[in-house]
Length: 356
Image 1 (cartoon, rainbow, N blue to C red):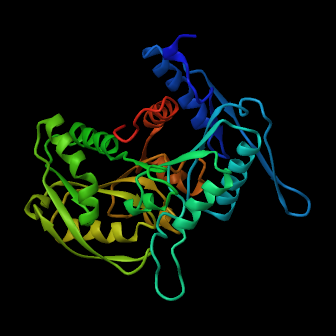
Image 2 (image 1 turned 90 degrees about the horizontal axis):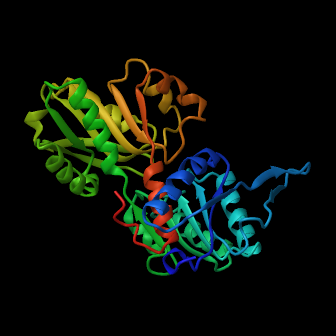
Image 3 (image 1 turned 120 degrees about the horizontal axis):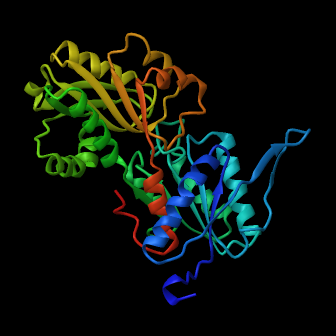
């Protein structure tokens, strides 16, 4: 083996937690192709821990040492952070450390409990910092970093034990590329106007918008909402500012980091179409949380004509979303190419922050 092909972290192993085996199998050849193109052979192994419950209701995990001991293990998972998801990640990280993985990383499409980023009144404390610390503790000092896509608030990176131990990557550019390309192809005569729900979203997507304007050679009018957040669960649209005159007869594309229940988005869509005369309303949200009664609310006579999401939270094994997927109101843009690039760069100790 040449020096350029040697990796001090051992062989790369993808550890697919429940629901993520298909994704691991998808990115395995992509990672290996990247290695071939750069003359850095990067064979990828995949292991799948077995989780279950004993007759007593107590959980167990089974995972052998093959492809784990002495390997660079990357755990693939995603939120929302249910009790089951948090327990599986905790057990898997501890098992990998116990099986003597040389290095451990956790890649989570959606950071669990990322909306619990600050205290809310006298009865509720922020849980996100505790979750981050617990993951590092579970790995017994063997985990180098957590990599997460589009954190709800960037300050969560400060919850890691050391600088750079929690790294955020951004997926907005390709999501917007797909939605804008479809809009231009299907409705070439309509003005496309971008809508950001608040100033935070504008800052998150500003660089992407500037890049896409240069790439497409067209000006993209931008409208920004004034949103009052009552809590991590509730918010209300107070008004719009920016290029509001460009909303009339336009295809409006609303961009945000996530869509949860869809309530605020529907309120916005109705205001934009009824009060400002928009012709079509599309949404592009990186994380399709789509919880509660979102699936039914977004079906039928919803003012939202189309929704684009990534598969950071896999949608296809969620039965309640099947009707939205079948009628193509919900469109999924896979983050597998970005995930393969991120996994490859992490394995070879290269920067992942600019993988867009």
